[in-house]
Image 1 (spheres, rainbow, N blue to C red):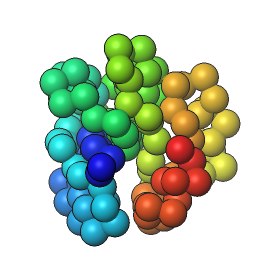
Image 2: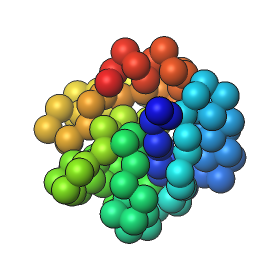
Image 3: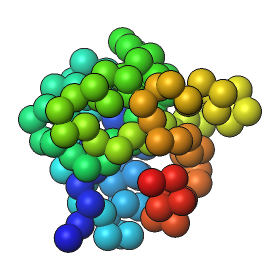
Image 4: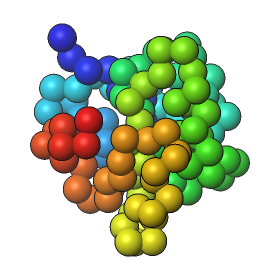
Length: 116
């Protein structure tokens, strides 16, 4: 059975790129969201098994989105993503509800499986 994924990022190009990578590696992208509010709504509606959450969203910080997603009934596994400096962001991951952090340019099945 394919793992279902919700991709949360304000950049259309990254959402499209992530969808291509994930689907080529056996995941099923069930939805996308461009901001934190729609991410929470889509997660409740679609109940994905995995959520990729951009750290920098236009309305709600990605760490807060991760925390809110983690509090949902049947919460998805959460992986934070960003193109910004890993060293700057990784210390914020513990306590966010996310399983880990992944640089956007390292997105792959292997990298995700190492986190989840």
